Length: 189
Ligand SMILES: C[S@@+](CC[C@H](N)C(=O)[O-])C[C@H]1O[C@@H](n2cnc3c(N)ncnc32)[C@H](O)[C@@H]1O
Image (cartoon, helix red, strand yellow):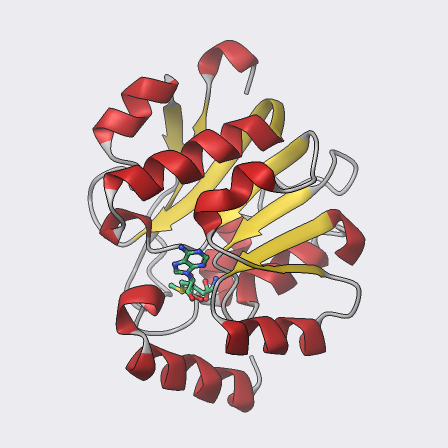
């Protein structure tokens, strides 16, 4: 990650701590786990809370073309940086709560760097409901978390009938994290 990206991230963390909610950008080890099941031949990918683009880069490194990746980020400074860093990427300056309105059909996955657990239930519900409108049958919602519990609150999991798989702990991240993959079991994930 470029020093200027790190400086931008830390500056925005100081100005908007309730939106950024992370001590540092995701490490390359966490990014690698987030994108481990992305297949460039399996359709478009949607990213939520792209920040300065560490997970974005990892998705593109899997072979996904920039035009097949839709990155949602609400912070305008981060959006400017994403557009400069990744020519051809679809950058959407909007709330992740509106993901269901994206003009994307049959995404293979929604990959989220959002601070989901610190969000109100209504916003989580909008994000997860929108996600499962946009992913194809068997598609997944991929989310890291620093804590011991699943990062999607129980009421939303139950409403949408979500099950999950979870990675081992990724120690080389600040703080250490796990990656959850949520899916609707009847949909063949
Ligand atoms: C923890 S940072 C993650 C940045 C980057 N993906 C990474 O992993 O290093 C969370 C990001 O989510 C963005 N964010 C927070 N709430 C959001 C929302 N409701 N809609 C879109 N982006 C949001 C913040 O602006 C910030 O860039």
